[in-house]
Amino acid sequence: MAPREIALLEVYRHKTKNDLWLIVNGKVYDVTKFIVNHPGGEEVLLDTAGRDASNPFEDVGHSEEARNILQSLEIGTL
Image 1 (cartoon, helix red, strand yellow):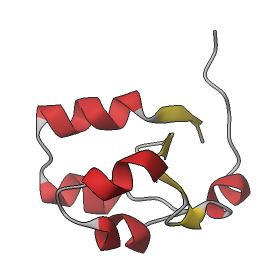
Image 2: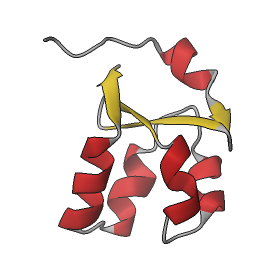
Image 3: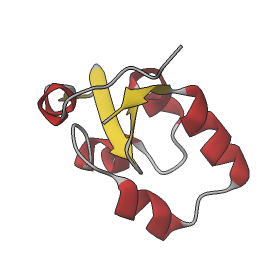
């Protein structure tokens, strides 16, 4: 099955603590359920909610485990 294509405007509509999507390297992730478990705190995710979080994500130098968690939250591509 091909990945679902999601428009930037649709991602932008999901920018609250109870409905949080973000983009990392062209892929769209629904991190709503992960926000309470995020080691860096919810504010980090809220700061990039509804938009491209590629640079902040890569700048932190996330572990392989973090990248695997992110991959499990993928819902489509931009």
